[in-house]
Image 1 (cartoon, rainbow, N blue to C red):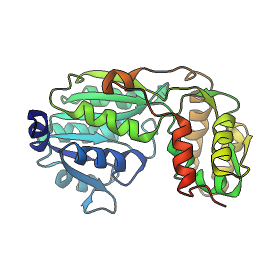
Image 2 (tube, rainbow, N blue to C red; image 1 turned 180 degrees about the horizontal axis):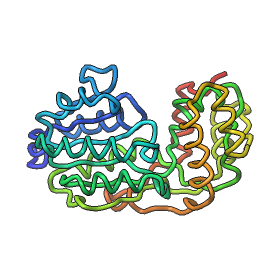
Image 3 (cartoon, rainbow, N blue to C red; image 1 turned 90 degrees about the horizontal axis):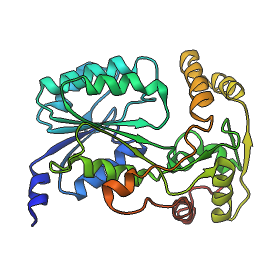
Image 4 (tube, one colour; image 1 turned 30 degrees about the vertical axis):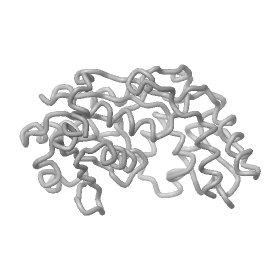
Length: 282
């Protein structure tokens, strides 16, 4: 067994949102790397809820590091106050390293990033581009299965990143010898695609027609409200889509190669694997 494996075996990592797109994969990758993983979620064996501080201490106590994936979004109203309070409590309970999942180009996330930086912990911020898995898991999946993605992204280009690459970067950063404490890392996929391009690749891989229908952020927000999304959350999402999907993220980031020494997974690989698994069947 290598010295590095021994180091990770001596570390307990709390993974928040362990049932989510990135948290589940971080927990799996951390376990494979030899960490002792404390997978926490609202309904898991380790109960954790961002909105219930009474769940925080049991999740944090005895952990050496923590992965912070705030829901619904790192830039949402109240995120900086909640994550900041959690980060400070983590430091009080002896957690040494906090890794925050953030988003490239999201101005709304800056207060939350700052709250973690100022918590007194050793910190790393991982700013990711749009997840490929947003098209195979979560609220957009029903529309994809029905043959249509209605979304306010216009023809903007985005370097979709595979959530497995996010997990691999986070686990590499968590290693005691990584040297990424105090740094902001930007990570993306290897190729720029419009949402129309992405849906087209999925459609080809799945062997069925799936249409992309661009709408305005305001139209999309109105539809969310009709589906019962609270007004404050809908307004935040409208603002987020109007800013973060305005073309500011139409560039590649080298963080995956810098940290892992390899290229990020291509969107075509994601589309092929998920299509073979039947994710987008009608």
